[in-house]
Structures are given as C-alpha cells and as structure tokens.
Image (cartoon, rainbow, N blue to C red; front, side):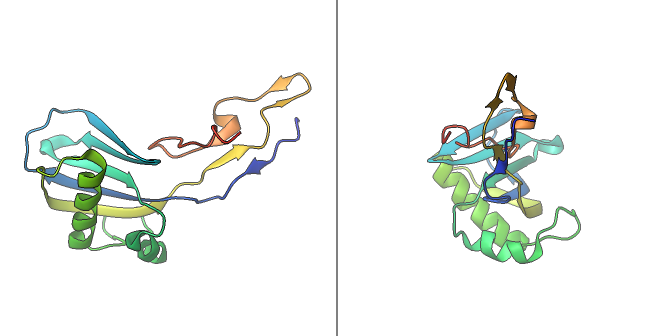
Length: 149
C-alpha cells in the first residue's frame, strides 16, 4: 500500500552451525560474541553440549564449499565433522578472544544461508510499517541493515 520494495540480496551471509562439547565448565545459558560486523552465538543443550552458530566471514572456504550442498538435515552434512570442528574452533577463538577453551565431540554441523531483506521505505502517506513486515533477518542478529537507511 505504501509502494515499498523488499530490497537487498536474498542470501547475503552464510552461517555455520554445530553441536559440540567444550573442555571448560561454562555456565548454562547463552553467550554472544561480536567481532567487527560478524556474530557468534553459543547456547546450552542437554547433556552439557553447546550449539554454536556463527556468521562466516565473506569468502570463507566453508561458505563457498557449503553452498554446493546446503542442508539442515541432521543425517546429512554439508561439511565433515573434523572440518566443521576446526573452523568453528578458529572462529570461536577469534570472536571470543578465548584461546584456552577447546571444542570436541562434534555431533552435527550445517552450513546455511538466511533470507535477509529490508523494506525500501517504512512510511507512505499516513501509513507506517514496522517489525516483521518491514524486514526479514537472521535469528543470530539483524546486523546493520537498519543503520544503512
């Protein structure tokens, strides 16, 4: 009704998601680490495992290879457990600044993209759009999509 287009690239980022264990005791709950304009999120799972999701940097080799076989099926992975574990460890260390914590016992990895778009305008005449009708974004964070407006 206000003539807004849904702008931006449909899949601008690629994410790595994995279930692992850590060799240090950490409190249950969630942790978020910001590194430049990238994000890493870690949440507790049952049996002291952690699910870690990270926005892969542009040009990341796993992002490039993962696009060939993206899947969220738990019995089919786009990357091998060792490759996923090594890359997740590298990114966790870089994003968190924690070089001591080690990951082990990976049970699952997925490489995926999120559709992210923003309305070209939020107002028209006497109408205003906000919230979900105004944008689609990653559950790991909206990034800076509104800062560019």
